[in-house]
Image 1 (cartoon, rainbow over the protein chains, first blue to last red):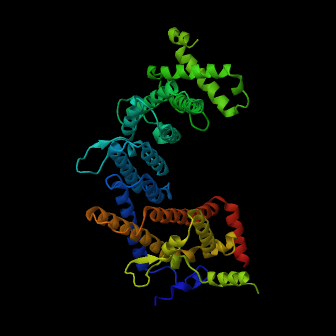
Image 2 (image 1 turned 90 degrees about the vertical axis):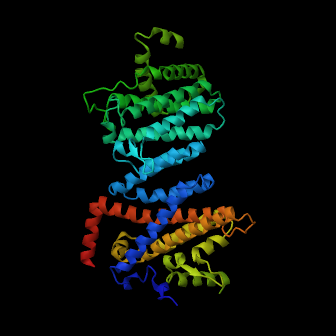
Image 3 (image 1 turned 180 degrees about the vertical axis):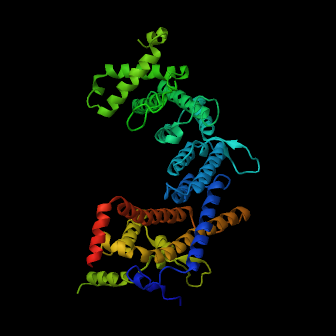
Length: 313
Length: 168
């Protein structure tokens, strides 16, 4: 017979001596530590052991939970968690499944990284001690979507793109990331700029190749959101007030690598305007975003770039 | 008295002595050498899957919210419930560890011996348990989290409680 623990219900809790003995604490932390180590083991060996994605995602969910309960503190633990996730992303090469990537990015967001260097120039604690950068890994996968001859898993890719968009939104909302110098040619900084551009190019490829109207529309809306963030980021406007917080402007959105995307966005927009049916009920926020984005895009493509403007008309 | 009301009464009386710890505590059942928690047995026997979530939610609600829902009573209990939570959570983590360890050993045995060994724990069962665990974690932590938030953000409420306390 055990120590009559069935009486230890919440109703009888007043009879429990408090605070609990140190043994309870030790037992708890040992059990929790063992459990977390086991979860981590499952995550890192998921591919080699050929576990299905559904199992991976559940274990990741359970593990991530322990790093998002106290977002304001425990920064060292969360930082280690982020570098673990980045090392996981780095391993995914062999399976090339975008489901995994998306889940891992969402977990990174759950851990809400405090500083740019949590994600960039991350030391992977491995026998080969070299640096890894979240952006460069994500870019690698974005670029491979660009070069896929036949795109058949739209849903997976779109979810992946949305998770990267959420990451961009996150860095835009975080002051520490916002003050990052994107044009200094170093990591962190340059890598984010490259991520923006690769992301834009991937969107333009989708916008160009996809014929299915619903998906095309989804991509178009994502493009609008993305370019808006890019403009706000470039002008260094504050997330809430939209007032300039730094005198310096980063000319991110004017990068010529993104012009093709802008052209395709304008083209799609023109086509939609001819379709009367699409102008039925338009969300005001969506309309505002579009007006804002198109205003800037016209400026980029307009002066001194007449040939581009003509192409559209 | 009808049999249904009897059942209901039985459930009620048992629940007053019911603890989350009992549900999660690992124990040896029958002649089996494998330690297993009541939760695992319950989840194992409940089919179909969709019902499991509902039953699990009900259990969590009953264990953690079946008393008066007022903020005051929760405040009074707060320091007392930590003790039971620690034991419960220890059992909870032990259970996850045990189940994953079991699964891992089983997979290793399957890959090393090519004999068609019987799978004790299937993927589906494992995932069912993990889902329940996530659910448990989400609900328990969330309940304390939202409660703490209420306590921290709403100073007016806190003052009210303090006033209330001074009267009682």
